[in-house]
Image 1 (cartoon, protein in one colour):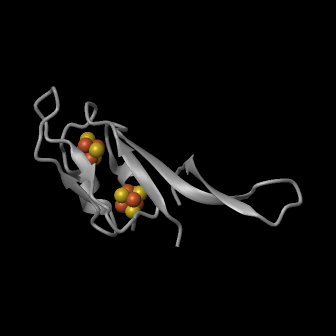
Image 2: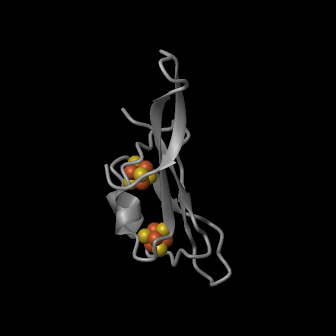
Amino acid sequence: MARGRIVINLEACKGCQLCTTVCPSNLIRMANSFNSRGYRPAELVDPQQRCTGCALCAIMCPDAAIEVFREVKVKSQEGSAAEEVVLVVTGPA
Ligand code: SF4
Ligand code: SF4
């Protein structure tokens, strides 16, 4: 299973909660604090690192406030069998 994470732009979020409805693993909730516009922004709660980087939350967000990263394995050197994991900005899975 791919692993990912999201970064939410707290100031761009208007607290509409749409992203919370689409995460397959229910990893997004609304924060207890407020941003400068008076909205409670969304936040990722993922202590077990279950986010897959599927990007459904980012697609749903009407304000493009969510950036998604997904781990991909890449060859560390030309011809090398070794692999390393990097995070890349991703679109829909
Ligand atoms: S990228 Fe997918 S799994 Fe991760 S928080 Fe968003 S909807 Fe949930
Ligand atoms: S969908 Fe976007 S604007 Fe709405 S709560 Fe989620 S991050 Fe905020």
